[in-house]
Image (cartoon, rainbow, N blue to C red; front, side, top):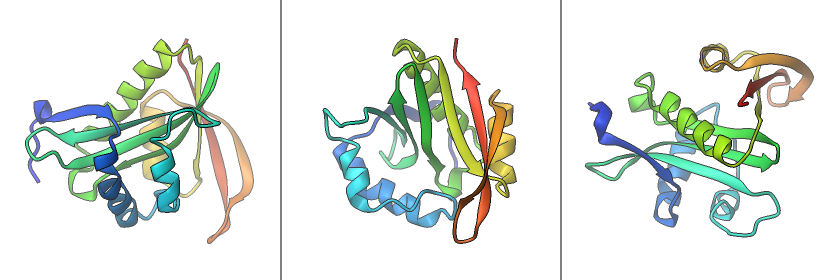
Length: 158
């Protein structure tokens, strides 16, 4: 797929996006294996844990190219998931999703964004480091299947 920089919009998740988001997750080995009900719950107002969910959409086709989910625990937030379609990875979509999320978090008064990532996921670790996240710790044996440590990272927003 060929993308022009102005042909991708970052916007809030819509109900019509859910099937595509779920299909995208199934393509990606490192995406969280959440059941479809969890994705549907992202659209429910008044959830116990408020979230910001953004998608990157192709303005011509309407296709969802990626998404990001952050849970809010003011004055902090947790990056729960970020995913980009394999056909458009390494084209700046993940960076644009994260930048849009950070802007929204700052306007919501969030001071820090936390995440955890598999220690073996060097691509993600390089991406987050390039976006100014700093390693803050390790959770031994946090992940299962296979068992693996989680690297904890934080981005200071203020």
